[in-house]
Length: 386
Image (cartoon, rainbow, N blue to C red; front, top):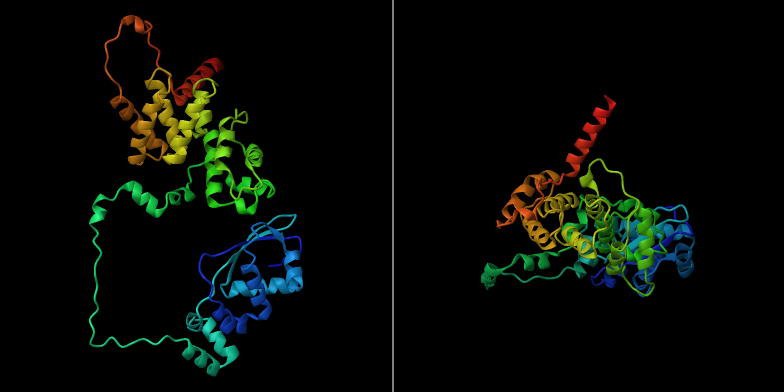
């Protein structure tokens, strides 16, 4: 791995119980005593949940840097450790994810570990240890197995919400490709002092990506907001505080986009209303549509624009939320689908009423979409050139 003394590491522990007998009975014969000692030291470092440098690890084990590097590699080769690295000019950062040992029988029957054990320790040792650790099973000849099936009638009333709880609601969020915030650049540029390794959970990273994509926060500004949301004695990033800080931002660094629908929803609504900042309620609604309902931000922009035009340049938040739920159910997940669905959704939600002629100006002016405004401006520019 080419470890350096200034490199940092943090440990992630498994939930499973450890089979220490297997480690001393078979693993130690192949990985060596120092690698086994290092594994035990890392396993029982559970009270340390912050990064430490590699030099302190070498000092604690009384080994050289080269030997520490070798033992870590040996643990990884025997599937006792997973090693993740984030490269940095000032020193790399490692995550050492510990894995429990195989039981003795499983180790000896492993297609590689078992053969290597015979090669190193001899066939007689292999057979002796295998015989000692092979559980005897009783003959079932002449017996019938008895089974009592569980009543599954309760599944007839099983709800979608219950199923989401069972499978885990966060699962579909992890691979969202419709969010525009540059999370990779953020993770590189954000200092580990402001956003430590143990804060960088998948939930926190997903939340940052969502917040940046909804409010249009730049990478540089997001680093500052994460720093403001950081509290030293908290074990996780305070996502609620970060979201609150982002909602109070007045974004001035507007991203360059090829289509207005690619703007983050908060910026899109602001431009739709000629630079009037969205209200706190409107920002909350936009956050709910993207984060909770899981709508594509471009789909949200089409929805907002359609509501804006249908309600005489006013956002009817209740109506938008109701239609958003319908779109989520219909799997409206692309810009094209949203445009096709917009007219149907808002046409079906218009109500007839008797109005006085004085309620409207003599010539009713239709609100233009961003694309229509752009086409009109291009036409005027061509007339000017002629």
